[in-house]
Length: 173
Image (tube, rainbow, N blue to C red; front, side, top):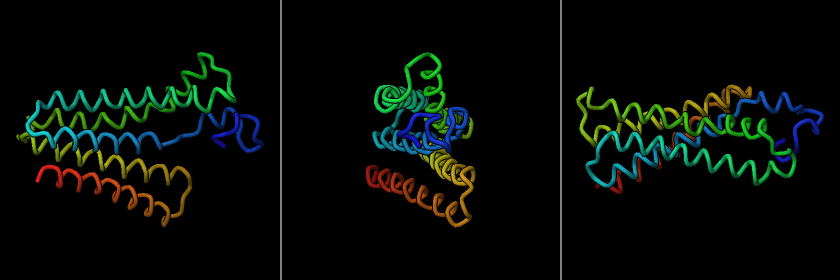
């Protein structure tokens, strides 16, 4: 339905389109956050606040890129660009930013946990990957997937996350 304007498909009305819960951005944002943690962590010691801000800033930049792509790429062909449509797309893409918050908070909290920079990287990475698997599972559940499809979604996302972990290990050892 993504390529059709809301209301022109007998199955999808504009209200259905607006109410649809799409976790794609959150899954993507979690993987992005994991990549940021690995990239920053492979460079050696760093201020934790810097990494937390890098996570949040990268999430916002990618969110803006996704919003612009949707508004000017595919959406402009079907839906007039007005304030309501712009707000709707901004809200729909916001999970990219939301996915960066838990790893950023985890990294920022590591001094309270007695973790050094390497521990901060591993905790941030673990939180990002848990978010990725969690959001993928939530998406499958929300879509009414079978248990098998839900497990497959979780495993595939775990494998993608583990690929990021392998990159981290390869870059730092």
